[in-house]
Image (cartoon, rainbow, N blue to C red; front, side, top):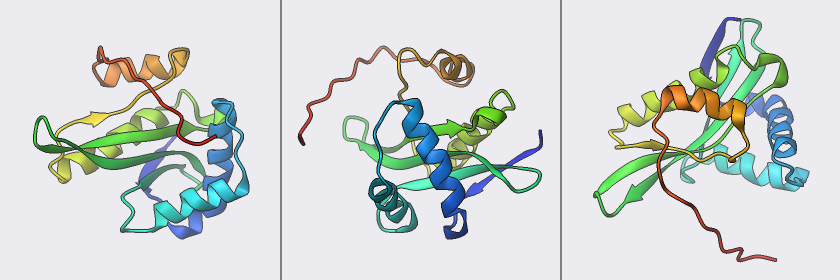
Length: 150
């Protein structure tokens, strides 16, 4: 499968929403159209900080996306890049789409002079982790959450 990556634009909204709904279903997150509206608004707002790169096949059909944003490391006095979300449609899995999306974000991060590209995934995301283990170094950090909204 021939794939290309590029920044998402407003014309991609419908295809992105379909993929984003698939991503939410994969992680068993109840998601409403209003939630997708909010996230799309963030992605289209150049002042928000959230960004999206999409992968498309040779026919121009979107087959995946990744959301990313800069974050700072005070300890190292550097801006880094956090890859928040990555999703590839079922039919495009195994085609290199995930790797292409990560490499596209890596290029953005390098071009911005950011220090590290970081992401997390679910412990049981074995297929994704198989790809990630070939591209990055797994860290020893353990994450914690405090839910602030009911």
